[in-house]
Image (cartoon, rainbow, N blue to C red; front, top):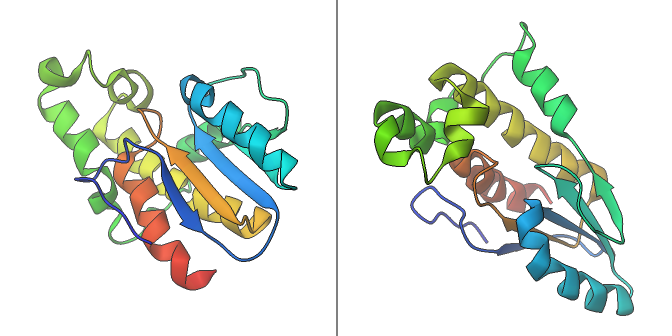
Length: 167
């Protein structure tokens, strides 16, 4: 069930995966206020929620994965090779760097985490590959994504488009 809201994933999105009781929640801690009640209900139904942390710890009564240090290390790795087509995955971030005054207050992630167009390119590649790795590792029944500002927008949408046929 591919989706692309103009290159941005700014609302909750669900992708169906094979029969398994694991559910991935990929979101900033702010959005847990919406996912905590849902996760509690799903646990009552026998599901196992796993939160993929994007911006630090918060109250979450279930399993979690914090890939932040690994993502940063991979982005800085001198041998990181970005694949063909990665430029399509950070179009929005390039626009932010081209007009920083327009976007600075709305998208501080790009200015403060991505920092440069080249780092944004590398982040897009690493998040795309990491998200696919989470899918392969957990084989979740569903993935809930609420991307406000911490993930390269199109990289997340692209993984969903490519994941469905593989799983």
